[in-house]
Image (cartoon, rainbow, N blue to C red):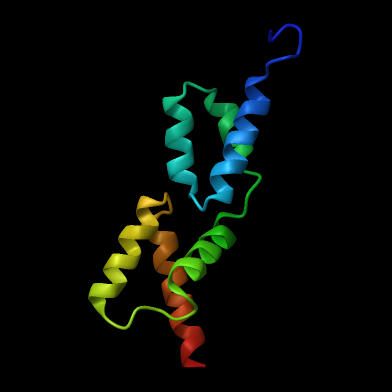
Length: 106
């Protein structure tokens, strides 16, 4: 089927990534899922480069938690865990929370 053009790993990979991004998953989680499916890591990396992960992180955070940052350290830890389970790096989430905290101060 691949020889006839009816099946393409690249097309499947791009559609899979697009679907996972639409559901609010981060780069690390999607990369792991692609690895488990046995897809070519180089093609996966190329497909993942198409997205602005910081923007997606911000969108997912706002959708789940609203526009304000956590009021307590316990809430902040829960938010960090949620975002990391979604596949966003701890450093990216920390940067977002710091930036949002500064925006609230203004």
